[in-house]
Image (spheres, rainbow, N blue to C red):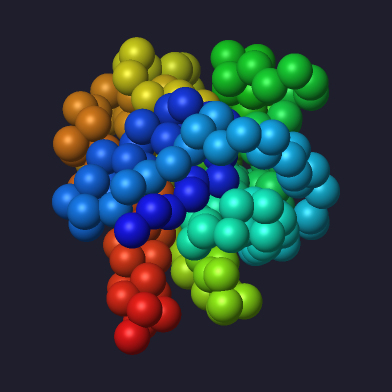
Length: 195
């Protein structure tokens, strides 16, 4: 069975493909489908963005579609950058600039508690829609550490670990990441939707 992954982010596609490979699904990225529309992520919540992407891409392809939106939520920043995580430092998306801005804002912070949250929306050809979530709590480091991963991975240490996501192997990260947890919940929802 084919499942369209509604992302152009090569890092996300690789991470999600690895997690779904054992399910025997044929994953298609947005680059695999001709004339794929650009979906403007203008929602005010992760849920709104994930649902919008899933519905629009599903309508275009006619195939089951999985879309996600992820945000880093920092307690002392009232949940920011949140839904604006990718473009926190402005356009164009620049991971290093986002990390510099975040670390600058937290320079004198009394708490560095944060969480990554991923919301996944599954849209089916029959109009069905399910959303699931995965989250991992942790802290923000003082300086970037590690070279793996992407985004805020070099500055986020998940609870129960002593290294950042960027210092972990892909296998280690896939055990504890917010996206892995959301995808596990999506697999359960997928099975329920298919009955």
